[in-house]
Image (cartoon, rainbow, N blue to C red; front, side, top):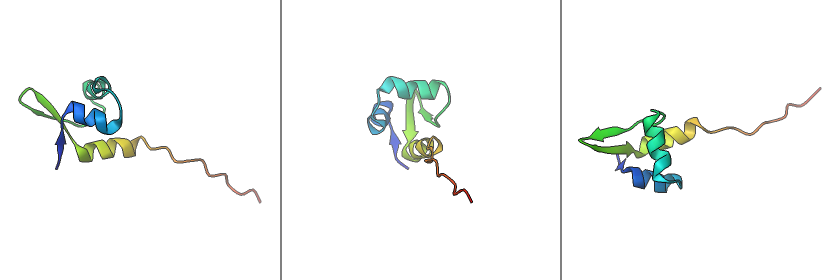
Length: 63
């Protein structure tokens, strides 16, 4: 289990920390509070990305 700060999670996503804080405020990503600090497990980041994955459309063969 690797806990990342908001800034580290943003770096991993390639976004701003503000986006990560919004995900946390909207409860769209799992997080852990340690005192007043917020940490995000790297496995939760992977799960969030996997949940948002959209598979490409595979055209079916017409008979």
